[in-house]
Image (cartoon, rainbow, N blue to C red; front, side):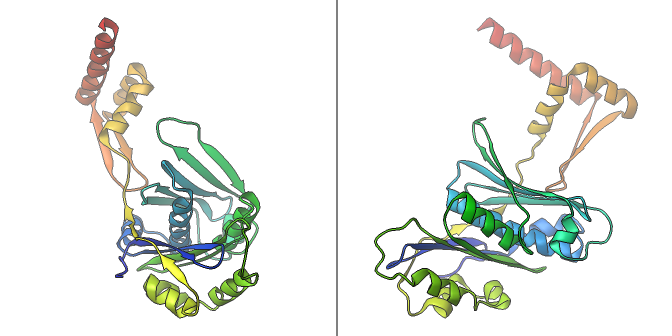
Length: 291
């Protein structure tokens, strides 16, 4: 089986209640960091968070999106990654000053929030993740073990070319023929080197770790960079501001410019565009009234 450059593969251990996932991001990751001039350490943390978001979104089988958000009081002010249920990823960050030091130092007195945002306007779920651990992997696996009550381990890595990760999770207790399976499989995974996680295909990686285990691989899923911003979305936002507010902004600066922080796309609206927006809105309202 060929390993897709930007892909997620699920796998299970046939004779133990353990499942896993491995993600590798190449082009997707390079598109994220090409859009902004992030400091080197910020890029590494963003890459790890991107890999983690894909792994978690895949375990949840979402109809919507998963958002991982670190809000900091230190050099890192914001680090946010969104991954949809069909594994489309976007990310952005804000920082102030020199981004060096440990994760805890960079974030300071911050928050780590996980948001599940379903489609169709259903209620979103938010969970606050305690900043317990020295790495994103440690913080998330501590949270998952407590919140889902499933033993979970994460390995994450990133550089300027790629981001990668692996997740292992012990499933709810079943009749186990192999009581030591979880301990053995985790110990083997702990021997995984950074370069192996980054460079090996999933098949090569699993063979390197588990060639004596019976592992079943599922069909790979493609991962890609995609931003959901659009001119229509911005137009809708301006309509919600109302005619008076939009006219007031235009009186000050002639055009309204909206910049997407995820993909750097800029949308510009002048007085003529605004007039068309509100004319269209009035037409739609009148048509609905007559119906």
